[in-house]
Image (cartoon, rainbow over all chains, first blue to last red):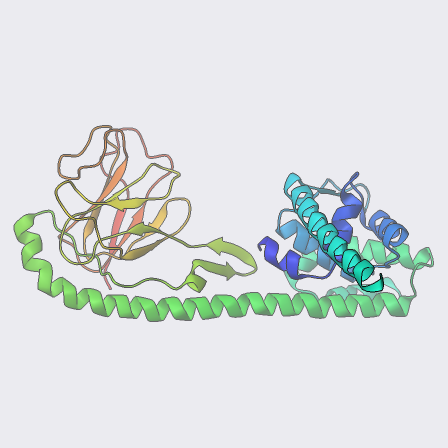
Length: 105
Length: 233
């Protein structure tokens, strides 16, 4: 698995990486956090589908399970990938906003 | 949604996926339903959709593997046919020189052969060795843990590229109508022209069929000849 499927996938992977950017979280905490900052409600199947891809790509790591919950943390590679993607998104957003401003002036 | 239904829905996922994430998914599903974050129906549909996605992904991976294997088989047959015909033409030269090797050349493995997925686990086949087309010496040099590269002995023309597929980790499946010796000498082999300090692999004439070379990592100290095996076509 390379990074390309992650890049081509929807924003779910990015939302998970953003959620893990501050500290490790288990599934339920991820769902609540993502809902909180993005307003997106992920189901268990969707969440773990994206997590599996991220883990295979080496962008997140699974930590030892606590009870039935297993926390995940972002790797250095994942952090770098997230930084690249967010910078790219910010640049595109800036271009879009500038064009809107020019068109409406 | 009861546990039995969850188990049934999880059974739709590929086994490796279920073994790895099944418990966590079931646990999260239960938590979400108990917390009123989702309904059993929505949770069930979400698992069903997830299973379809994972099944599709596994199918795509296996199809990729089958295509790559088929392509590799076709290429092997082509290389074998080429090798048999060119080998006959150069066997006299090989015997006379005593250090001549023919590597079936002119075949470049297509890029998609370079990446093969087997049972969902990616395995990379890198093309890292350049041999020489036609009669002439071929020296393949490198250190354990590194890729190998063919070099031209002094006074000869650089070898024309003829690719041999090597597996990673120095497990090598070469295609050469030769015997293969692996040296671990810290001096330059006079016939090979390899630089001092290099571990190198010399492909020599005398054999037939395919040579399969396994270079141990690291090479044993004072190893004069490591594992070599000739596989008759």
